[in-house]
Image (spheres, rainbow, N blue to C red):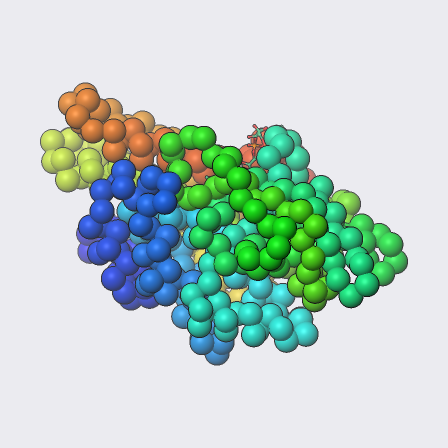
Length: 377
Ligand SMILES: Cc1cc2nc3c(=O)[nH]c(=O)nc-3n(C[C@H](O)[C@H](O)[C@H](O)COP(=O)(O)OP(=O)(O)OC[C@H]3O[C@@H](n4cnc5c(N)ncnc54)[C@H](O)[C@@H]3O)c2cc1C
């Protein structure tokens, strides 16, 4: 079993042909804005990955999903980021559907049938602002809800069919609560503006989505149990678990692509090659351990999310170590003749920039390990 074989087998089994299609393009082509990767993912049926089989989806389990996502990140870092946002939104919809009125199941089947892609807008482009405290207000007007504000960066901004966005809405007692709005991309008042200026991960389409007097049927806005204290409900624990694991696996895939180049290069000493493979695979094993627990247990609690966060932060360090050593090992001629190595190293560093930040979580993680509830944000 060669390096990344297990992951590529998972990808080929669940989304046949996608790996070969991606491998047929250069990294630069895949990573440019408007590149072919998102369309290839849609064509391969990727929208259905986490939709349960009884709702006509593929129903991948967490272990299969993280392996697949590592393989995607090894071919196209931007696609791994963008599709993590889609899968995270779908997984949250599946969780909501368990307690919902029934329209969520219809939506899930439409996602499969029409190969719809979901963007996920939680961030509002301000450093230090918790993703659990959005400023977008959802105002009730009769049977409708009206949204105003903007989400940035929002991956898949140009390819999305539906936007899921965090908003604040008052509940029946007048208390402000976090809610998730589901907005069809062609709703009047929704527009997309340029936001992402870096060339790194530009293929993820992380631009700004603007909402101006966007009017929705009230059933398209789902209230959560998260209030001002940011203590998490089951929906958020599930959402964060999927998000952290898929994001980490994707970025580990990107670092693995660089390690794979060292293995193919052939001239590196065995001690260096073994060190690189051990480091990146050990980080993936931690992700897989959490995924296996998700697969085996129906109840996902805070301790599992604490494990997922620790696996993610440990992966950030493994990525930093392996990409630095891999670049040095590939050498100056590789650096001079192609920017693929430096691109993969820069892209893999992106894991540090997704919520919740390690510094922001340090106090909360220590408190949780002391038996207190986990606060995120
Ligand atoms: C490739 C990519 C794609 C993205 N796509 C999406 C998307 O589709 N949807 C979406 O909603 N968002 C997306 N985001 C945005 C992401 O969710 C974050 O909201 C955003 O990157 C946070 O920006 P920030 O690092 O400046 O802010 P912050 O996370 O607020 O933190 C900045 C830094 O401040 C420090 N810090 C923060 N809090 C504390 C604290 N309490 N104590 C000490 N130090 C602290 C940390 O060093 C931290 O790294 C994407 C980001 C990237 C990189």
